[in-house]
Image (cartoon, rainbow, N blue to C red; front, side, top):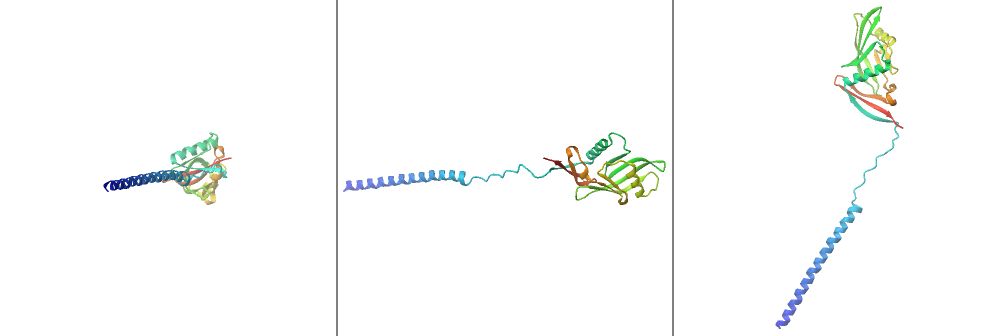
Length: 208
């Protein structure tokens, strides 16, 4: 009887060991299957969306570059342009910016040598052109009407084609669309607040 009981206990112990290893093997199989399943999902299902490739070609005829500057640098640019425009000859006037746009010249009116100073307030139009509105002037000690002085300036001095003096409106119109820089680059004004030194332009560079 005791021997039969012992054999029965051994069989039950053997079954428990077999069941244990069976569960261990099943667990290992599930872990391995899960690992390879995760690799498959990572590569083929959860692969990050590729960034869209930017367009290489553009239909635009010009490339725009925004730039800002200071009054000091703008004065250097104005002087350089005047020197190029006049071929280094004396054209009889100077233009520079402070809190306003200043036009200074030496002239003879009624055979009297005078110092002329016109002060303009600039404003930017929606199309990027600039209007200089006469704010104040000093023409020696002569009490001359504004329209006469503006007409005198228009007839006496040479200006680039993109600069138009309008005596009746007491202003000067700067058609920047007609101003061409090197390489046919054009310029458009964005901001021209001289008091705050807020000066910015957009350069339009032609492309093929």
